[in-house]
Image: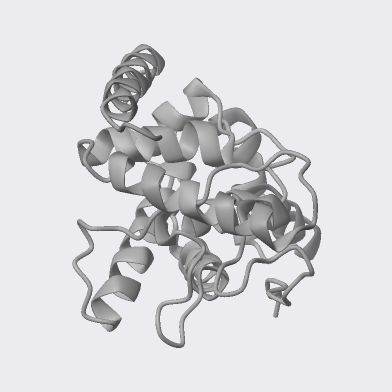
Length: 216
């Protein structure tokens, strides 16, 4: 059974699993790329299963960490949820039928449901996600730098949580996960143009909200 490595790393902030410890997707998640892998993986071809997992796993880890803010919910961590999503995806794979849709749309839907289940498991409102941690560039290893990053992530997460849910999903997939507009469109059932419009509007709104914060 293929599992996700959830061992802690030195760069983690206590209580959080930072996004920079999760690699960005290394392969394209378009229908043209995924469909042949899905067809082969359905037959149990181990090479195809490995190749499909290599494409979707990094995106799932980053997605779950972003939606859960990198914080453990009780006994459940974002990486645990990502692993559950992977297992659910491959469990349904033999019965998956391509009816002209997008495989990544189904994967994202499963991930969103698993994240919602995690919040329900600890009696949290899924419409009030914990703050996201922002992408971090090269910084010093001083504890103060880590805590400043956590504080910024918490404050930014509160602003993001005020956006419409679909705009939140667009920002998560485009900026945090690193998907293209075309891949994000397939994952959300939108057009690439609509994704770009929602992303633009979300960023404009976030800029307005940030400007209202005196010391943001």
